[in-house]
Image 1 (cartoon, each protein chain N blue to C red):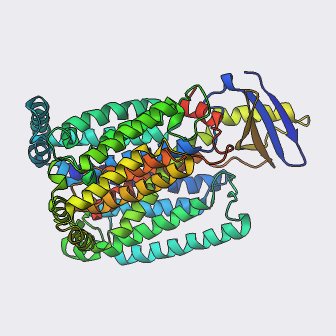
Image 2 (image 1 turned 120 degrees about the horizontal axis):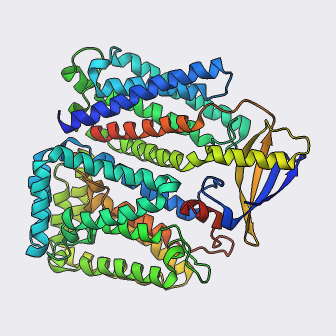
Image 3 (image 1 turned 180 degrees about the vertical axis):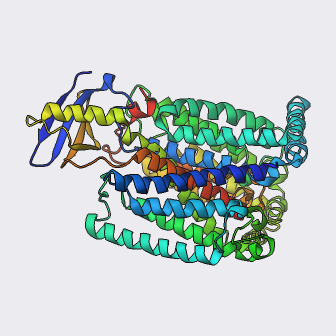
Length: 249
Length: 338
């Protein structure tokens, strides 16, 4: 097996895993009444299968035109989500999960646009190189999209920055962190409502060698479904999409 | 660990204090401060480098037989021999070698981005960068007289290593530094490192054939080859502007780079103005002399020096108000995984 084929197969496998896992998230969230970003999970399913199909054309039975429509719709949806977010929480606000900002949805707008770009830019070579279905041989499109390289370069930087940013923030969901915060809340609250959820709001200032941390207390709700795994899926998406965009430069 | 908490039902917030000494990485997560942002920028660049290494060309023998040996040319034999040996070794094991290179660089990127592995990743990045500087860049052309700041001298990977040192997650004792890069090593050392780096860029700008009337023209025009149409046109147009003007342009460039080198010793507004000039120059180098790290030729291994010089300049940007200059100690704790 050649190196590029090996890379494509590995990335395709990861994308299939992410897509299948995201389907599982949607099912689990419904079965256990756990909150999750359903639209993000759906996006991960679609992008996961689509990218796996681009990387290994044999596993993509859906024509490119269909995927193009899907990703236009997805981009429009996330643009609307951005608008909805701003009207509800403002530009500086946080999502219902108290963690994600507007950038969470903006990033998905970029990801949807990047998917659309990859289909549109690679349509011509795909027509002559692909076998069945709508799959594209990624290696075959190198150089064919050279007049649009400024755009994927922007996509590439946004995706990689989003990936490392998400990885940096993954510690927000540490079980140890949550457990400690909950014990602090139990200590603080005479009523002892231990089912409240806590979110770190940020350090205010150092005071005499100590740290002050503000915690926002929210009404009791079921905890968000596996946020670190959701972040992991996002990081995998960003890296894989970055890889594919580089092949198209 | 002992701690005390304060609860405010009206505001819906609870504040608790934890002794610094007892804090651990799993106990506190804070928003990234200036240094952490720069670390994340470095992580993204490493990640990109790792992904670039997965391009088809690097899995072929040509990577070991053409790409690597090319950097050995003109170097002393003590430098060139190991480069040629590593090229031959890579050529014999192209698939495994390139996969390993890609994995290492992606791991460094992820390692810097994930707080518990920050130190290990930064340490690895320094060792890796020094190795690549020798084996992959032939010491950046410093010893064979082809170094030119316009096309990336003295080697982008040296700046990776420098950034890793300057962004190491510890705070130097002493007065509060006025810029991020001084937090680890202190202002005198940080300024000296800046002076050496940009001073060397100034020196290389007028080194040998770089100051010949056609030197700059040849270099920029040469970058147009193999690039997409829009970039090729930019390169050719820029080259025509310096045609027969190479000597004058390089002297002006060397003076500018020299001013930027000593700029960190000047008052904050002047420093920042010169840093801004440095960033603009770095961007121009990146576009005109480095062709975006030759990303569009399917054989670029990294972004080259332009973006790294910009990142480094941000690290030296001087705070103008006292409130901004106070580092966030909590973020340090997390970064250190203390």
